[in-house]
Every structure is written in structure tokens, then in C-alpha cells.
Image (tube, rainbow, N blue to C red; front, side, top):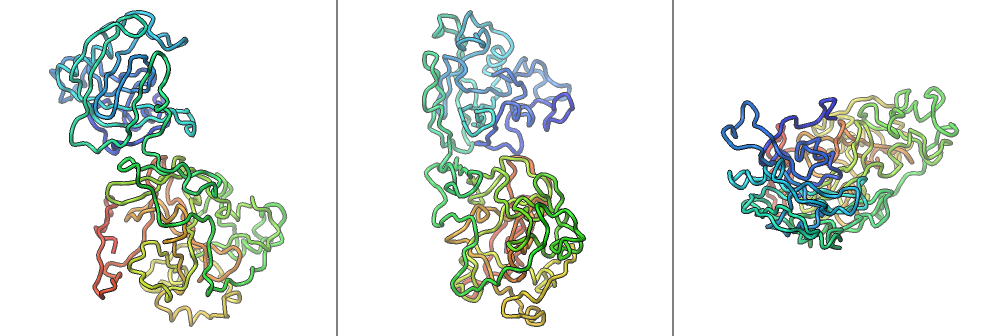
Length: 494
């Protein structure tokens, strides 16, 4: 990435970097290089040898340190939450026991930390921890800005001179929740180093999904999502009747010929997915007809892409203003299915107080197709078969209904989708899917990637509330501010 000039931050900076908050995690040293948090792949101390032509630090004595990594690689490192005793770098037996084999020298990064102390220049501190779930077997967590309050040299554990630096965390930053110390004692890493700070749940789904869904809360590690039971498929209320399975295609193995595949014909004469990355939706449609239980194709058919479970590693985490949120630990390509909105399939008119339930998703596919209630119609015409609707409901009846008849209630039973937040400029879009039956009133709701989504970016979709559309139990209009923070923000969710 460096050679191809593809890193996100090309220059070197002191202080915080925009978009990287306290608690942000990286799963390798290379990721920190790519975003500019710590620009030296092999060194513990990221220092700048001389100022840039245009710099507020012109006139300062260089080198100056911009960031350090503390991960137990040196035998004399010791630190807790707010104060660190940091060992200088160099003269370490890297191929051997990671212990000093001669005296350290006051130059390069060591000299830089000394100059930071004399000139009161803050330093970014990143702590490394063991993490078996990481591809590098390490995780690096940004702890914020620290100042060097003192330095000295002493004889280290191995008997050679080492430089020591005392660093103290600057006030006014987000609180750290990890009580862990990164401590190297006589060449052995302390057990607490192996714990992952902020982890409150290793798998939200309790093994129900193919990929585990970790939950992190750096603000309050004792607080985990509660009040619901995780499910990975729709539950149906007793008073809701699901129509019989629709006729299927006669394809064998995988559906490849749109002319002979009856499911492709329902999608306008072609398959809605392209066979890249496990199936990607070519464009948003009013409704997508996937292959179902009566089709002759196998489960890996591309026209079953949204039925194949979680393909990407998702994570639930706590935010400052929006409560729980979801992000992906994997890159998600545009058009890929991310997750289905799962809960209890209910009738709208039987919900007691919809204004107090934040986990209701109205199945408004028909209303969206017809532009009822000001809804915006999606692209892509399809031939909607009307013969398979429950109780033989006709188009005139559907068009006369101002509101959807059914909804998915994820308040007490749900999956990871219930934690995905709203954004006025989202990176996901809602797609109605019909697979087992063809009743659009009971379509599956699946969230797809609207753009290429990089790792660690929050996943969001537009809740599509109309302003002043939510009425509370007292009969008054409810208002809720929007915290999406995008340039397209409407300032209010409803």
C-alpha cells in the first residue's frame, strides 16, 4: 500500500487523527500504518526526524515522537490505565528471548521521546493484546494522547542500560474502561494481557450464526445488550397464516439459464444476482424472487444468496450518542447481502403501543412498489404473481390500505439487525425478498450493501420515517433527534 500510494494518511501528524476515537481497534500493525495512526511497521516508536515545510512545529527540536505501541515486547514495560512507564527501543534480541543484550543508545525514537518531554508535545498511545480471533493473533487498541512527564536511564532486567519514560494520560478524553495492565515480568507475559478490553460477549448469537458476533462496550464493560432473545430466523405469531410454498424452477444444481429458469422470469427475465463474492445484487428492485423449497437447485445456487446466513464478520459495539451499533470486521462489497431483519411476524393492528417500540419494521414492500404514502419506488420491474396471495387479496384491496398490514417485531426476539442504526446517508439499503411463497405482504426484509463498505465502518440504513409521523400514547407528536452526523443529516429521525 505504501509503494502504491494507497495509504489513507500520507503525511505524519502529532495529536489525534480525525475519525479514530479512543477504543478504536486494529488487527495488525499494517492497519495502523494504512490509516496513519502509527506509520512505522517494525518500530515501537513512530517518530518524525524533521518538520515538514509547512508545520506548526517549525522551530521545535527534532526528532519528535508521534505515537508509541506498548504490547509487552520489552521486559521492562509497565503500565496501567492512566500512567505508563515505557522502555526505550533498540538493542533487543528479537530472534531470541526478546531481552536486552547491550546498552540502549539515546538516539532516534529514544531521543524523540526525550524531546517530547522537553517541548510538551503529546503522543498517541496504542496498546497491543493477544487475540486468537484476529488474523494476526493480536489486537491494537488506541488509548488516546499522553504526555511525557519524565525520563531516566537504569539497569534493566537483563543487566543492561535502558531508557525509561513516564507517560501520563491527558485529561478531557473519553474514559478508558480496561483495567488491564500490559506487563512483562522477567520475560513472561502476564495473563491479563491476554484479555480483550471492552469485550462483554464473545458471541451474541450463542452459536446460532455461522460467524460469531462479538459485543464490545468500552464505555461500560459491565453493560451488555439485554431484554431480547437471539434468533436467526423469523418466528410467526399464532394469528398469522403463512401461504403455501410457491411452485419452483426445474433447474438442477445451480440456476444458470435465465430463459429456462422460472424464477429468473419472475425477476424480469434475468437473475437478480451476479456470481461474484458469493452473490451480489445487480440493482435494487421492487422485490426479488429467490429460489425456494420447491426449486430443483441446490442451496449454493446464486439465486439463494440471501438465504445463506452471515457471510461477513459483524460486531456489535456501544457508541456515545446512538446506543448500540453494528460494524463489519470484513470488507463488504457493494450489492452483497449483509443480514436479514429477523423477529416475530405480527399484524400491525394488534401491536399495543407501536410508538414505544423501537424495533418494529413494517413490511411495506407493496406500498413502496406503488408509491403509497409518499414512499419512494425502487428500481427494477418484476412480474408479481397475484395468485399466491393469502386469502386471495386483490390489488384494489392492497392499494386501498394506507398502512402495511404486517410487521416484524424484534423487541423481544431478534438478530443482529435490530442493532443497526439509522443514517440519512446510509451504506445499506432495504430489499424485499420472496423465496418460499409469493405474498408480498409477508416478504422477507434483507439489508444489502449500497456501496463498498470498508472494515470497521458502522453499518446503517435509512429508517425512512416521515417527520411528525410518530404519535405518542398521549396523542402528541413525538420527536427524536438524528445523530448520524452525515452531510445529508435531516437533524430529526421523526
